[in-house]
Amino acid sequence: MRIPNPRLIRLGGVVGGSIVERGDGEQIISPLIYRNVEIPSPLNKNVPSLGGTFDDTFSVSSRLAQAGAVAGQALTICTFKKGLWKLYFVMQAQFTGTSDVTKFDTLQLNDPDGQQTAIITMTHLNGQSVFENIELPFVFQRDGFNVTQVTGTTIVGDNLANNIALVACREL
Image 1 (cartoon, helix red, strand yellow):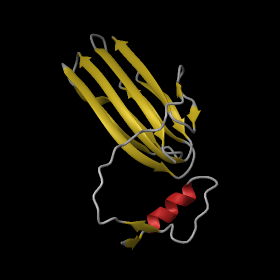
Image 2 (spheres, rainbow, N blue to C red):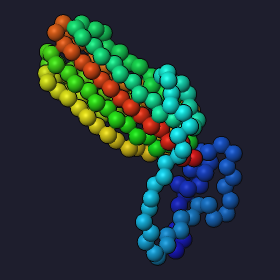
Image 3 (cartoon, one colour):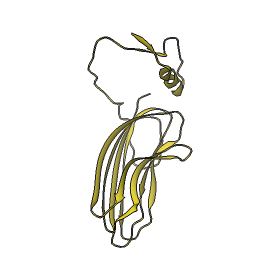
Image 4 (cartoon, rainbow, N blue to C red):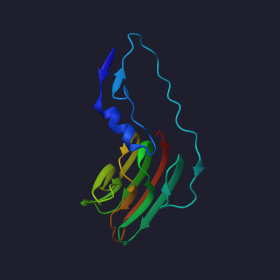
């Protein structure tokens, strides 16, 4: 069965060098059910330093720790070229000290215009800990989207540990 799907044509236009041909805007649905096995992209590199711009599959990790009075930090983990990406995030964080619901740690996605979307967040509550493992697909229509690790300001007596890992698979 053929079903018109204009999103497939738009996806084809996102990837540099692709040519949209007749029939590309149709999705074929088979009357048979097949099991899907996902094989992610081959890993091209482990990134030893943070903040690079990538157009191929990679993995990266970061750890931020704060003890006592420390200003909040924002660390750009990586920046993506346009295309279809599947991102595997892991964040593990703990906080002890003075509870303050206006302060938080987050792993966020930023667009090239600076707009932010929190992917994983932990509020500064005494004894709070977070462990999240998330898999998210994204089609970035332009270069410059980035992932940032943000920690909130801490005061005397506060302790904070924030660890993240990211495997980014370039699908198209």
